[in-house]
Length: 178
Image 1 (cartoon, rainbow, N blue to C red):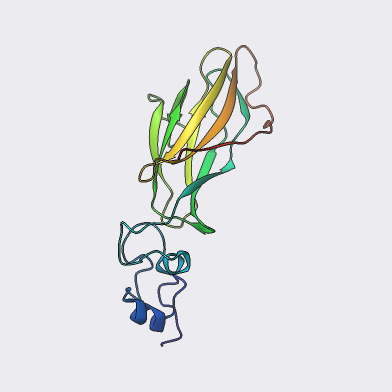
Image 2 (image 1 turned 90 degrees about the vertical axis):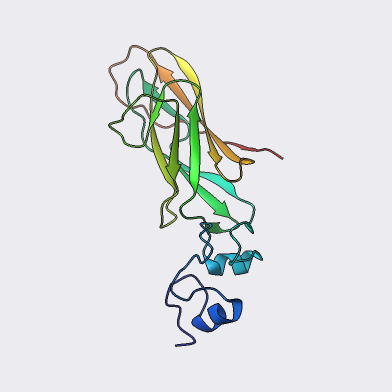
C-alpha cells in the first residue's frame, strides 16, 4: 500500500504520510493544485494560501472573426502553475464589446462571466456573441485569486455577411501584470 497512489495526485501513500496530506484527497488544502504538484513546485500542500505563481494560457479560440450577432467557437483558457494544470479555479472573462456566456446558446446578457477551470483541470470555456457592427474586440481572462495572471484573446466582428463562421486568424497576446 505504501507505494500506491490512491488519489492519483502524484504522491505515493508513504509520501502522503510523510508530508501530512490526505491519501484519498488529491488536493488536501483545496487550492486547485494537486498535492503532488505542490510538492514538486515547492509550495505547502497543507496551506491554501501557499500557492505557486499562476499563468493563464489560451488553448483555443484566439483570433476569431465572427459575423454580427453570431456566436464564436469556444474560447478556452487553462490555468497553469509551472507545468501543472490547476483545477477548480475561477477565471473572470470580460469582453470590450459583444456578450459572453458559459453555454453556446446563452443567456447573452453580460460582458463579464466567471468560468471555472473544472475539477479535471481541462480549463475554463466560454462563448462570445459578436456585436452588430464591425469591431476589434478584446476578451480578457483574469485569474480570480491571482489577478496578475491574465491573458487577452482577440476577436473581430463583421457586419453584413451571410457566413456563420470564418477561419481562425493567427495571433496570441499574453499579458502579465507585475
